[in-house]
Image (cartoon, rainbow over all chains, first blue to last red; front, top):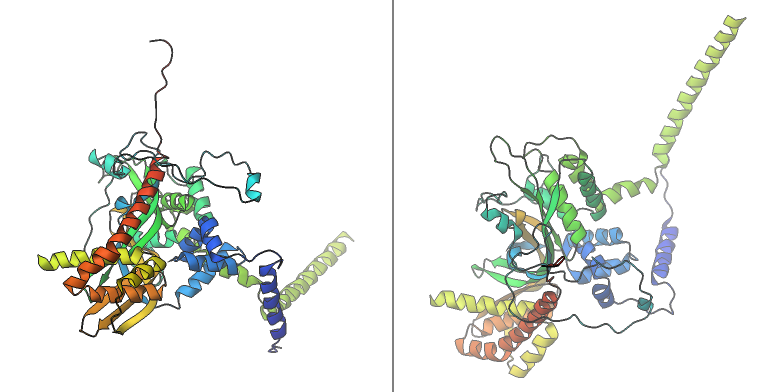
Amino acid sequence: MYVAVKGGEAAIDNAHRLLADRRRGDRSVPALTLDQITEQLSIGVDRVMSEGSLYDRRLAALAIKQARGDLIEAIFLVRAYRTTLPRFGHSEPVDTGAMLVERRVSACYKDLPGGQLLGPTFDYTHRLLDEELEGDPLVETGALRGGDQEPVMRVADILGQEGLIEDDGFIDPAAEPGDINQTPTEFPMSRAMRLQSLSRGDEGFLLALGYSTQRGYARSHPFVGEVRIGEVDVEVFMPELGFAVPVGRVQVTECQMVNQFKGSAKAPPQFTRGYGLVFGQSERKAMAMSLCDRALRAEELGEDLVAAPQDQEFVLSHCDNVQATGFVEHLKLPHYVDFQAELGLVRTMRSEYEQRTGEAVLETREAAE
Amino acid sequence: MEIKADQTARQDRMAILARCSTERLSALWATLGLQPRHTPLRGPEAGLVMLRGRVGGTGEPFNVGEATVTRASVKLEDGSVGHAMALGRDHAKVQLSAVIDALCRNAETAARIDAELIQPMRRELDQADETRRQQTAATRVDFFTMVRGED
């Protein structure tokens, strides 16, 4: 019999009150400010912006504070907030070639125009805990180096001059890229929509898939053509003015992954590319994204589909951590009725089984006698 | 030609207004002593723009993710209309930027605003960019070749 029940209102209220209490923690410790989070936990903030798919440092910091540092919960909060705002339009495509570069490294060329610019990187640190940071030591500002600086040329353009790397293809000026927020998911998905999906995909999931391509679960052979981090100008076309106006800058991380390609009936042997573009300083994510982007191009490039990272439906249906956490975590919500039904089913099956085995035992005994 | 030059000047001004800090803008604005009466035509209101990139860096456009923006349009008593849009959710800054854009419809006022408000902020923002460039340049790797054995 199905009986509707309600209850738990007071329990829920008190649970939320307790959550707020635990979030604040020991009251003798000063509360975190959003400025502290944006300035000193900036890479966590960047991850929330990237996977929350909303560029706004302060909102991301607020979400991190509210979520007690649970970044996936914070991403969920940001995604929910997005839906409360109207969309005014879209920007002109940002020009990453004109980036104010803070970091740019290439694993393909030692000497390249613009040079290897290490920027604020964890690379080459010894990964030893610095006990001084238990306090608030005086920290020097970054060193300066004057003189003329060459433009930081794209690595793809260097290889492109020899025709040894694929170009970005013909651009149809009238074509509009699809938007995964406004279109039901259908496979196969265009590369533009795949990139949108990957750019907000879960860093851990894409990292693991990218890693698997290196270990042989898809043809890969990647080199980092370049990774660059820096600020790009954003321009938005305003119809009332009839031209695009600059609205500020955003920080992005871009990765050009260069991959071997043996050629096909239509194309000569050359290098192909996987692409990653992510909000903020998120180098690991941009690199993982470019590995996944390249693996997902298997069909387009006539490669055998042999592994999960090449399967659009597998990658794109599972890379969103808000969807994933929603479906996994919903399992803890009341399933009392479903479970009662399953319990009844298992009881019936068990009694049928016991009856069968009972009869079988009896028959065996009879046969033995 | 003149229209084109006016558009470029307007875009340059908007670029500075969008990037400056509210505190700095308010401080410089106060020194100008301008207090034009204006009526809001729209906003200031916060919303989203979808930021676009290009596949592979130079290919077809794709949607990366959204950003918060605030926009405002105002009308002055003389009928001049001004618009502003900037990343973030700072209503006061964008409202003031729209008023400044409207004032700059008048060439004389525009010259004064450019000299006393836009130029100082541009210099400061350029200086900040230059510091960043030099900090990055200091992390540039200078390779040198090890000479082995005797020549």
